[in-house]
Length: 348
Image (cartoon, rainbow, N blue to C red; front, side, top):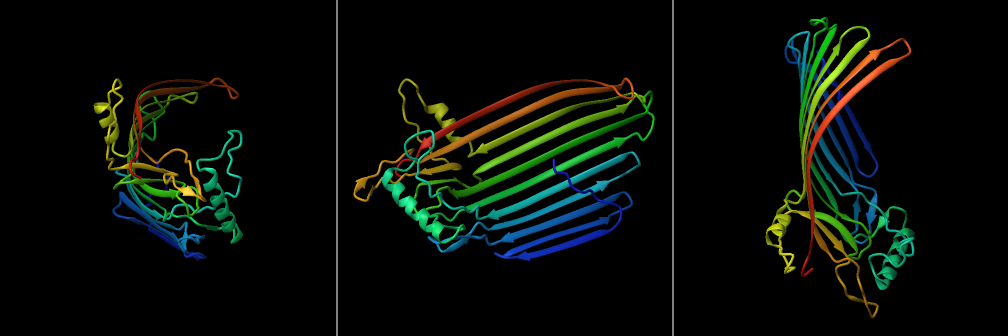
């Protein structure tokens, strides 16, 4: 859960503006105000933008820029001295260029493995020549052949309700009950060039309308009590649910339904969402010699489902001023499912 300042009963506001090199434009705004005697609101907004400081001399553009918009709104309801209820809505939208970098001018070998990297000898010679030329222009220059991006959309709702007795309850000196519930949804699409040269060597990215998604739900109930000046306890239950999809699980479903191990048949899939790996796909002749590439271009779908329920308790007994005795127990039941499928991309 997101930890942030909570609404207060008195009016308050703030505004921060910053500007800097490479098109940096940052803004922060906060407004806290009472709605009624028992309800207060706090709204915060942020906007961060910059143009990036890496120059792509191949495409003649600046890259590595950021564009973030975020909004956080919280209502605090205090119907009595014993109750505090906070409800928070959090929304953010990020449209970045993805991080910039510069290719390595090393010899192309992987230490300890032997042999060259994913690209062959001819491509390695040309790759290193481009890298060395980039470095000669400065530390923040590359020749990437991709217009990269990173788009993240996130929405979250958080509710916390807490009751505090503020005094004795039956045989207890104090009792507190707290309930926390949350929902969070993230959609992520991106394209990243990982060789930063003007050749198609190594790139990764999502395709489709939502690419990768992560949806979580969480619920927790806590009961905290003080029996006397020597004994207190905590008991609770926690529930967590997650669905994380790289794609929409379509290709895995087709594979399970159509693949026959005895026939070892091909299963065709036209994935609508997922992760695309471009690894030296164009096996062409370079410098008069055939170019033998490494792993071919392929497509990846990963699906993860998690569900967890936990029950726990903890006792603390103060034996003396120097010694405490702690006893705790927890029972957790997890259900997890994971599948990963990779498809060769034909005619690419």
